[in-house]
Picture (cartoon, one colour):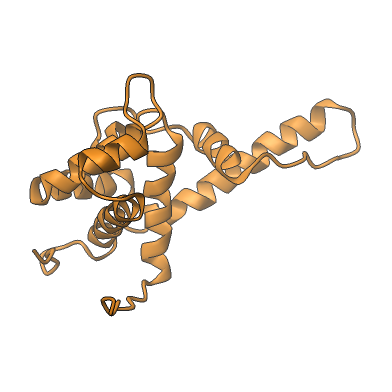
Length: 170
């Protein structure tokens, strides 16, 4: 018999912050360092490009007025979309709150944070593949992703519910 899984329903606000963290880890070349505050936070245009790459490129909207307008309009709309996307984080203190939560989490659970960092660097030149990383930690890919998801969820909850009364169990 397998273990019975507990179903945890996360609030939309936590899921939005989790998505922002995952975007940085998955799409930014040094996403973990950005989340730790060691690298500069990407601009709205960079975030728009990361969203485009993650979601697949979309066709530009055709507007009357010549070939330059659709590209310009597409870029403006993409940047506005990135600002709306990041507004979820602004409600909880912005990038400073996220960076603070990541650093607090790193002090609370350094092993899982190191794993999160190494997962985020997989695919970079000189970094191990995810399969090799899973083997090094003696876990399968499913467990590796579960650990990543738990770390991202914990950090997002620290951002959303952070304050004097919030403490990670453990």
